Image 1: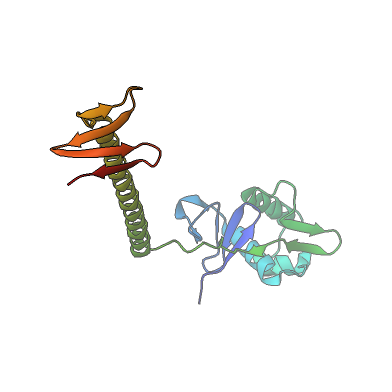
Image 2 (image 1 turned 180 degrees about the vertical axis):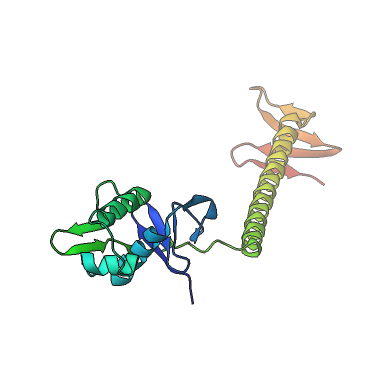
Length: 203
């Protein structure tokens, strides 16, 4: 049988042991917070709890607590007041007085807060490894792209440098206006047609 814990304001009533607590640890009464109750206070709370949500008359309460023994008229009200103090029931909202009828108990079954299932360590490690792998792949891709672009830029620079430093034909023949009309490539004579940009060489 599962342990039933009831909430009484800021207190917790363990129906199995008939004990009152002011704190819980993971839904279990914390023994360090046990509220000291007399036997009659325990009997009073037990009777009211078993009758919940009904009202117990004064006669029924005295029978449950004092077992029919003779008692003074002030015994029950005094016991109610001491029990309210133990419950922290300063506004009299836990042990409720119904004038002319008796008393009832305002309680509710304790429902532990629902916990969201935590990711297991194995699942966490698996997710972490997958993320690291994706990051590494991304970095490799970026590095490869940057390397390709750097090599292409280097080749373009080399082409430009070669073109800028290339030595023009050293042996040219110009006409009277200073325009190139022929040139020598090695021992070969070539006529240059500027309009057509053609070289006619005699090989």
